Length: 321
Image 1: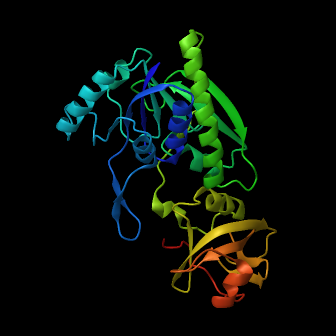
Image 2: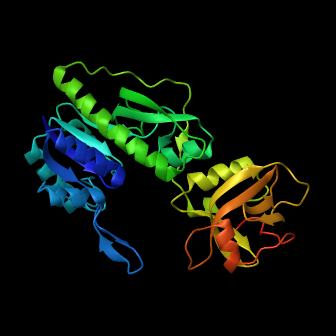
Image 3: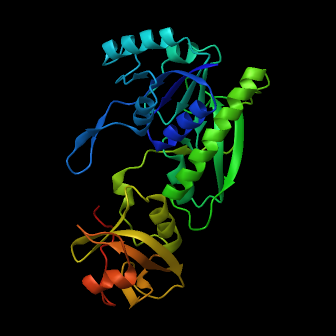
């Protein structure tokens, strides 16, 4: 089976590596153009590009696949490369570009997407973040037959995965990436055998995982401690939850919910080696791992040696990140 693979971040790179290792013929790899990154803002190749180059796989980085869009020359060049690849199927994982109808129709078996949720739960750009933020106890991976809608295609294969109580987006991402890499191999093997069954998505249970906006990471102390604790885990490693104290923007990397104490939201009600207890709209949030500007994340007992926090101080109602 000849494949075209389209993906960009580490989540996709794991799937590409697994497919390549399983012996599939990767005729072409599509990935996003290099982006500025790091303190020096130098152009950086995506994890998928790095893998493709290291293993001698044909590579294209169009800015768009729309033949009548903003970058028609890129789209035409990509179309020529895709036609030359003659793919039986196209595997898509966190690619970042919209696939127009001509791409969806090109492979004999169509385009298969690795989606990090149990569809139709969490269609959209940030299913891992939103599952943790919402307090879901289970998520998973769906291999989906792509159509023109936003994650609306038929389901081909899916497997559930429990979300641990202390799960962060970083840790759950790694589990789902590994699961997705295994499932796409299974799906393609079934496709080769003619035993892959398409199942329409249920009409009930639909939710939309909107792209993460940096402003969302600003903690609003009027919300409950439970909601804030989930958000801290959901926005780790990026964009990182923020909390402003006396004009200093802090990052909060770990917290725990404590029993309620009567105090205005944002008020520091206790400080100990275990953490900084802050009143919320409902319950108390114990800040256990913090980071000041220019510093690194530290456990509370170590952080407090270089940053004084005392009971009675009050965090801003909503931090500026």
